Length: 206
Figure (tube, rainbow, N blue to C red):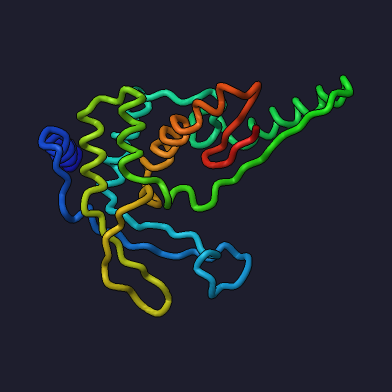
C-alpha cells in the first residue's frame, strides 16, 4: 500500500510538473574538513538535509537523465563502474610508459574551488538542452530548484530560512550527474584541442 501511494505521488509530480512546497525547504549542516581554522567558513563543507521522499524522486530523475545524456569517457566522477582507483591506475600507467620510453610527460592538475556552489542555474538548463535532454525533464528539474530555501543548523542554533539562487543542491542524489553534464558541456571545446584528458567530477588532468 505504501509503495502504491508513493508511486501515485511521483506520477502526479511528473504529470503536473509541480513539486510539493515542503520539498523546497532544506537544512544545511556545516561539516568541518579537519584542516585549518575551525572558525573559517571556507574550512567547512556544507551538507543539505533534504526530504527523504524528494531523494527518491531525485534518484528516479537521475536514472532517466543518465539514459538521455551521455558524458565523456574521460569522466570518472560519480559514474557507474568507475572511481578514483581507475583514474589513478590510468595516470600511473601513462607515467610508466613515458618513463620506459624516456619521453617527457607533462600533466596539469586543476581543482575547481567550490564548483558545486557556483554553477549558474541558467547554465544548467542550457547544458541539459545541449545534451538533448527532453524538455519535460528540464522543466521538472527546474521545478526542483524553484524557490529553494535553506536554513543553517550549527551548535549554536538554527538560522532563519533564506533563498538559494545559485549552485547545485548539496547532498542531492541528482547533483553529481547534473554537475557532470554541465562540466562536460563547458569543457568540450578545450578537450578537442588536447591529446588526452581525464576528469573526476571537478578535478581535471590535462
